[in-house]
Every structure is written in C-alpha cells, then in structure tokens.
Image (cartoon, rainbow, N blue to C red; front, side, top):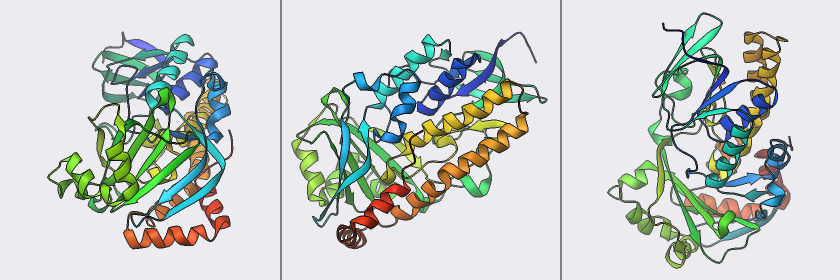
Length: 379
C-alpha cells in the first residue's frame, strides 16, 4: 500500500455532534485529528433538537458560549393522546432548544479554530488496518493514515464496519421513518410537546431563529399504506390527533419539503468494530421519545476522549482503551436505552397511550421517575 499519505493521530468518520465534540477535546490536548464529513456545513439533520441541561456545561467547556445565544430554556412537558387527553408536567432538569443547523456549524467553526482538519463533502469508502499500529482510511478525497479511527457516522452502518449480526439485524416490526420540519406558530418557548398518533409520535419545541422544530417518528408501514406519500400519511394518520392537525394546518412552514430518514432502528449496538471506536448513534441510539440522543452522543465523546488521551499519552494500551470505553458506555447508557425501549411500547397506540397518560397524570412522582430514567447527571 502507498504510504505517502497525510497522517494524523486520530481520524473521525462523521462530523455530527458526537464526532465534532470528540475532535475538539482531542485537539485541546494537542492530538492531531481529521474529521470526514459527507456534507458541507451548515446543513439540517432529522433531529428533535431538544437537549437536556446535563450537556450545557460540557458544550460551554468546548468553547461554545451558549449563554450568549439567547436559546429557549425548556421546563415544561406536554404529552397528548389522539383521544384528546393532555398530560402536563414540570421537567425537573429541563433542557434547551437549538437547531442542528446552528449547533453543528458552531462546533465545526470551533474545531477549525483549534486545528482540527475537517474534510467536507468527503465520503469514507474503506478502512484497512495495518497491523497494530495504524489504519488507512480511503475516502473520495484521498487516502489518510491514522493511529486511531473513530466511527461517528450516525444510524446507517457503512459496509466496511462489521457489527454482530444479532445486534444489528433489521427487524421489519421496528422499522421507522423520521420526518422533520421547522415551523412558525404560536408556541411557548419554555415548553416541549409530544403528540401521539397511530404507530408514532411527534415532538414540537422552540429552537433558535424563532423557529419551532416539528419532528415525528412513525413506522414505515404507515408510509407504505399511504402510497409512500408523506402529505397523505399526515392527513390520514397524524391528523387523527386534534393537536397535530391544528399545528399542521395553522402553522407557517419554513419549508414544506420534509427532511426525511428511513430504515431507522433503535437498539444498542457495540462500542467498537475491529479496533474502530464507535460513538453516538453508531454505538446505539435511544428512542426519540426520550429526547436525549444528543446528550448521549456528547457524553460518549467525553468518555472516549478520556480513554484516547490516556492512550496517546502512552498511559494505557489500545486494548485497555477499548475495554474501558465499553465499560463506561454500558454503565452510562445501558439503563437509558432499555428504559426508552420499554417506554416506547406505551405510546403510539390509541387506547394504551390514553390509559398510560391518565395514569401518569394521577401519579406525578412516577412521571418524574420515568423522565429521570432517560436523563443523566450534568457532565
């Protein structure tokens, strides 16, 4: 193999939230990092765009002045059933709203200032390991050499990544699509709402620019039953919830063209593949109902950065770094992912959802406990 390639200590596949946060932390410790991102910043992503307050201090530690951005602080939750019942609840920790368009772009600019090389419009085609010492990353913009490779590529697994079959085998019963819009409507800046409909739910919350993020998840079956027509599916399925019908019919859409992802599955995967460290949705994604996937990705980047810094300082070997990261990841997120999976079963079914919401309305302490299961401590 040709070895006259650009060399880095760490290569990160995917320049989303977790990947950029990892790159910034490593650069702060003098580690050379290259990030490969298939898009060009700034760009939109399908995402609920609510971040729990556990992540506030971490983002500011990276150099992002959140206090100066005048972001909405979210303290109140509303959950509705398609039968018209509303559960209102005060969030103990709460969160804040920011679009991925803005957040990822801010982090991209911070990364550049700290010396990270970000390759935009760059697709990774293959990763080959050269013994124990290095990896060669083949991309659409050339071949790069890195001592360590990290995968932060999101929910879709590249062909060159090998995952355990029993953890990543598609299951048609759990095959979802995600759809996102930004809308302008009368909506409290301190509130997030989750609106249930048949086989899905839709979140609404304020973000920057005076926009509101409207993002829903549903089964691919709902789309197929409506001739793969998103607008028709919304009218036939989502409009059965009177609150959603009002938002869809009485709001101003920033763009009526939806941003979509398909073939979405929610499960724990694994934290490495043949020596490639995995983080963010690449390692496992929490159901959007729990609203904390972004915080999980950022916290995973902090845990992985800690292990990699020790590795590059020659205070631990590669195998120890892989093992310690896996242990930390399982301890931090195992309960969250399981809780999200079981909570999701309560929603998206008319009678079950309505009964669950009425029960939780009469038991606020239980509601607090369930919400706490999906949140972590500030980091």
